[in-house]
Length: 168
Image (tube, rainbow, N blue to C red; front, side, top):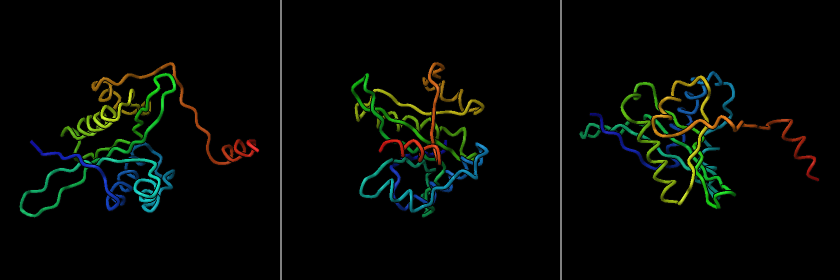
């Protein structure tokens, strides 16, 4: 069995995480939408006011000096539930390189996110999954449920600017 290690990501992992973000975007047929740069991740993950945290999954080195091999990541941040009166944890991205799938890496990353949520007294762990993503079955096997009655909404770009201009 392949040894998988999950650890908190560090600033020097930003380039590896960004590469996996780009690979995830390719998988989702949205590669042209990635605007993040390595400096953005460093600033927002490990800067003066961190906006997210990340975990890195690695396959163990060979014990003879070979470095651990990064094969997946989970990037998450806190939310807040007014109804629960407690924080939640939102997993923005979870990705495992294709060559490391079926080794338990995704399960270990999700379990590590759940452990963070429980440790911090979060009442929810949430994520979004594209309707066509074959990983939906994986998430259901972990106990996550699809909330059919909730529809995600988003505002970006010029529409966001127009809405913000109405605040004045």
